[in-house]
Image (tube, rainbow, N blue to C red):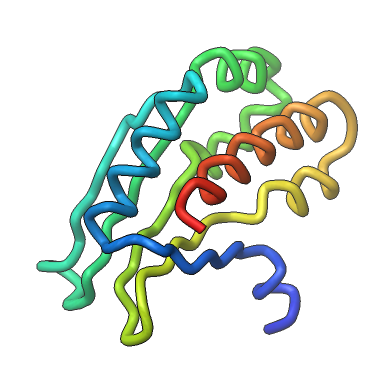
Length: 127
């Protein structure tokens, strides 16, 4: 089980400071035509320097959700990027959407595969 979990969550060590990492993720998101729809500073609530950035693209979301049989995917929306300061640096954690997309058949899986490419570009901007 632990091996499967490590595959489902992508971990990227940032080469930037905590604040710079957050800004770069937000900038790259906008550059790719997506929107930052939420930013949650949880440090005061969890005792760890942690910010969660939520991103979405209305065109992808509409295409996915227009079919009622696909609406279960809303439980995984929006895309989340967790920026965490660890003792050895700043890390970004996000769902491995590419692996998840492989588990979903048909058009929905294809759309999620496209989303995974965006996720890769976003985390690639801080590595």
